[in-house]
Image (cartoon, rainbow, N blue to C red; front, side, top):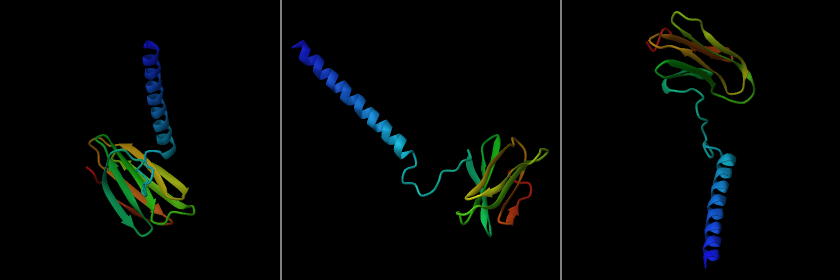
Length: 134
C-alpha cells in the first residue's frame, strides 16, 4: 500500500518538473517578444518626445536622473550614416555615430535637474533641439 502511494507521488512530481522544464524551454526559444512586430526600446524610462525629420526620427526617453536618445531611420535596411548626440547643460555631449541599419544609439546622460540638447541625423538630414526637458 505504501509503495503505491510513493510511486504515485514520484510520478506526479516528475510530471510537474517535466511541465516546468518544457515551459522554461519554450520561453527561451520563443523569447518574451515573440510575435511582436515592433522591437522594444533599448532606452529605459518613459518616452518624452519624438521629433520627426525627413529621413528618420529622434526619440527621447527620461527617468528621474537620466535622459536617453535614439536616432531611428524611416527605412531600415542597408547600412547608412547615422548619428545621435545628447548633451546635458554644463556637460560634454555623448555621441554615437557610424553606419547602421536601423538606429544610432542609445546614448544616455545624467541630467538630474539639468536641461539637455539633442540632435540626430540619418543620411545627411537631421534635426536638433534647443535646451529641452528642463
